Each structure stands twice: as structure tokens, then as C-alpha cells.
Amino acid sequence: MMEEAQCDYSSFQNMQVNITEEFAHIIEIYGFPAIFKTDDLLSAFASYSEGGMKIKWVDNTHALGVFSSASAATQALSINHPLLKTRMLSNGSRKSKCKAVRRAEFIQPVKERPPTDTAVASRMVTRALGLRGGFRGKQEDG
Image: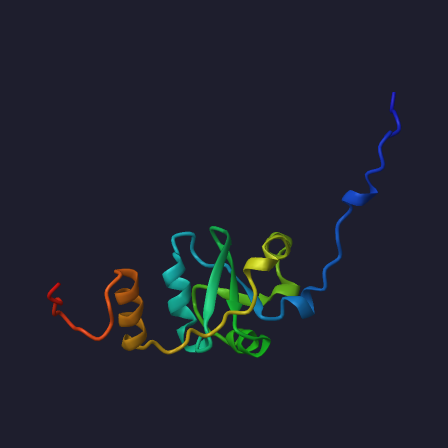
């Protein structure tokens, strides 16, 4: 005998997400050997990651490539690599799309790291150690 559900489960239906626009800076990387590591994928895309790139793993043979812009992601699709394949996330596997939607706040476009400057680093270390700026390696008589 079959009973009717007594709760309204309509709020649990799948949400429709505009993968094309919201996630245009992300591609799905797939079909690579399960032994690949993050560095292997980053190396494969080195010539496409000038503005920055992050890898978010979906499973052993699927990952999301997160780029700085939609145009950078589109350029990365042109990769010709014998051990991996790429496609826009909108054409990706259901599992990859779900990962992107669940982790949306963590896969925003990558921002390029600002140039480093030793003066800023020295100032931060000096302040963290509670030293006064201006003297280098000398101690004050006190």
C-alpha cells in the first residue's frame, strides 16, 4: 500500500542556476589520469594563467579551473594537451556544476597578485616584532 507524502517537499527541488553567465570564468578539466596533482594541472595551464588561476577538485579525474575572467577561461579552452580535456562549465558534468554552485563564494574570479616589495615586507616584520623602524641591526643604549 502506498501512502501520500504528508509534507511539502517542493522547496527541495533543484534550483536553476545560470551557469553560463555566473560561472563563465570557470572551465571543467576532465579525463586526466587519477595520479595528477594540482601542480600538474597548474603546469598544463601555465601559459593561460597570466591573470591567475586556481584549481578546485571535483573528484580524481575532474577539476574546476577558476580564472581571472571569462575571456581567460575561454582562451584556456584552446589548450591542446594529450592527457586532459576541457569544456565550459555550462557543458560540464552534473557533479562539476553542483560543486560550482555549492562553492560559489570560494570560486570567484582569481585576482592577480600585486607585485611584491621588500620594503613593505620589512616594515611588516619590523612592526610584528615590535622593533622601531630606522635602526638596522643596532640596539639603542637604554
